[in-house]
Amino acid sequence: MMMFAASLASRGLTNNKTDIPTKQLRVLSCFGGGGLSTPCVFLKQSNVDSTKHYCGGCGCGDKPHTWLIAESTDYSKLDYPTLHCPMKMPGFSNYDPNHKTNEIKERKEKIESMSPEDIQIIQVTIGQSEEKEKLISQVNKIIENS
Image 1 (cartoon, rainbow, N blue to C red):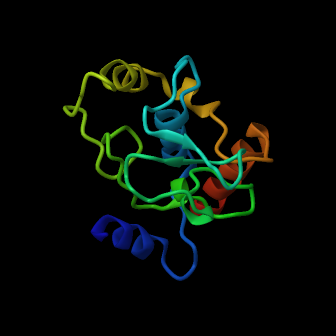
Image 2 (tube, helix red, strand yellow):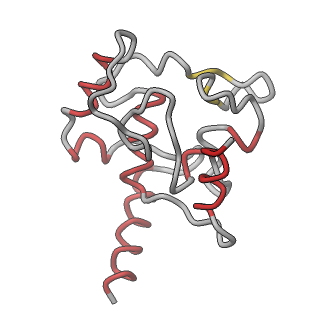
């Protein structure tokens, strides 16, 4: 409950979102991709919408606000600036490189050894292309630097 409250507080009143590289690491940690053939052992397909997934390890359940990736215009669970993972995987606020159970050790080590270029190709929304994500990221950087 405390972790959920921290996530909600990090969202704020203006729907703050984590940065794209962090979300890409989270997507990689949950879904695999980029050379990882298997998803997290806790990844569950939604019974409400078969195109959506949720974490079966944190106890959040299968609800629209707990789906890990949403449509490009919607806020998803992986968008929260502060977010905890039961496996303490890369990209999450409670990431711990020393936490390696037998079920995640190999996956975690592969993610930790990936190059930033490999991580940049991970798509973080449904219904939006990777190219658009990169353009948005570049525009946001220009805005920040002006």
